[in-house]
Length: 197
View 1 (cartoon, one colour):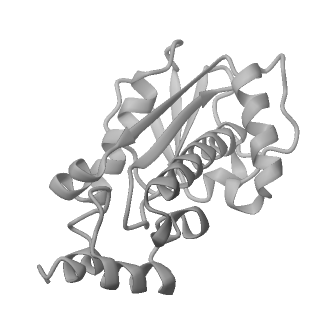
View 2: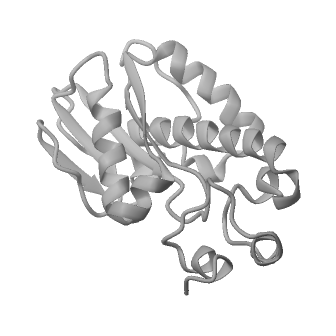
């Protein structure tokens, strides 16, 4: 991981989200403050890691981080706010949930939610900043697990495989079976399936 330079004198939280693109389920965010005395090797963008590696790092992050927290926005919130504003809300919730207050927050992407402490957006931060990589791993493992659980309730939709993203299979099942209560009704393919588009 190439080192991203930021104020190392500060207690820094990294924040990332998973689930902006799917048609179903919550958008999940995480905030992580790492412990400099307990480094974690192998942190990287969660999408570039194998599932086995993500699960192993998840346990290590939970064990070694100074503080970590999950935030989320549910489908109804996404539908009423839109996905961008719901994501910002979920990020605020993750930061607010930290047991230790950060002095500085680094957010993956190109914009920051309104926070009570200074923050900066870092494009491709999940590949550049260890704290954001850790947050991306916690958020992805959490959301993927929720999709596997949803798959047990609705096996015909294939949520465990596509994780709610608009794959050809998911769109085919949505058209044939209609939307579940967990689908995001403001998203075009779901609107079409409900006859609202």
